[in-house]
Image (cartoon, rainbow, N blue to C red; front, side):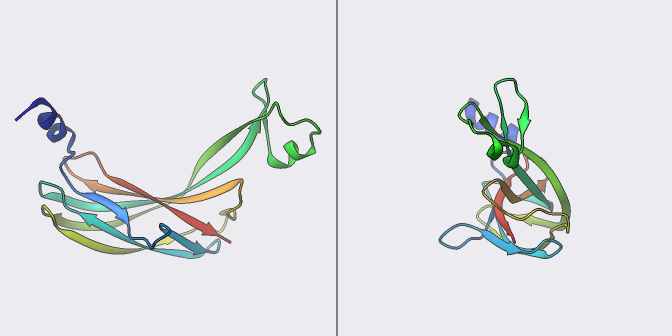
Length: 158
């Protein structure tokens, strides 16, 4: 076994993968604040059997804001009120809105594929999706002995 093979084994890189099952344009769910988004996940086995204990699902909101040369943060509205905006730089905040864990407790062997449909509550206080506000669903598989694989999908909150 070579160095890179030993490193992959040490990091758990040979285990399972998780991804959203999507259509031709990628995975996006439409949901209203306070509603429930449904997502289909696929867990794929790697070169070794992996024990998937659960999936942690996180709803994350990102807001764009603007920063001036001194680092002062401005909201979208404040930036629009300025006559001269070319000195502003865009920046994004990132906040966790909610987290859910789905127990799986399954062994995924090499080459195995498992589908999992999950329900994700979207908090009532969730903002709606705009060009300055994006909401994502982050799925992280809890797999003992490997770096936990992740997948990210978009939530369109309206």
